[in-house]
Image 1 (cartoon, rainbow, N blue to C red):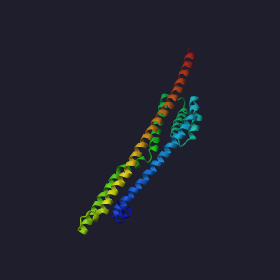
Image 2: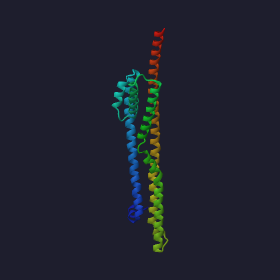
Image 3: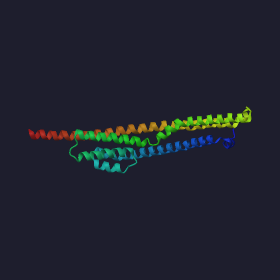
Image 4: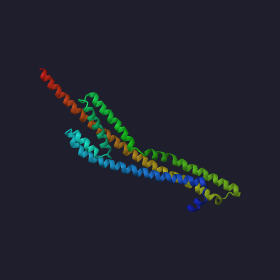
Length: 235
């Protein structure tokens, strides 16, 4: 069994630097994963609370109240999306009746906001992807350096026994194992978070579509009533 303390003491300084770098990547991967999981869980909880309060406002089409409720849940992705859509709706409504062109503007705002929210909820995940990609190669670099150190020691001592280079070989193997030990969980966490983010984005898209459908229905109904009134007046 390798004596880790002895190996660290005898380790060549480039390998020490690589070991420290890999450990830093491990800490960073853990931090990003925990932060994203907490943020996604909190956003999901607040979104459920917002949805329960917003449902009544949407049924009665009380957009003023819906905007107020959305402002109370600034950490909810759903509330931020609805708040942006309704704010744009009010802006269009302030210019007159909501026409087909106005609805298209609101749909464009919804798409832009969904893209922005997608970028926000994926924050830090590129770090996980990078760690999962590079740490095996960093560990391999440490392995190569350890083997080089082993050959140098053989040349200096003119001996080829395993005892002569056991520390360097152990150092090389540890670097490889450490790189893989960091990379594998990082990739697993990245894939897990990617799945959760994909589910959130899909839910946001469905919710935005339902709100836009309700908005279009309300104004299509208004246009039909106005058209009927004008027809009766003309008759």
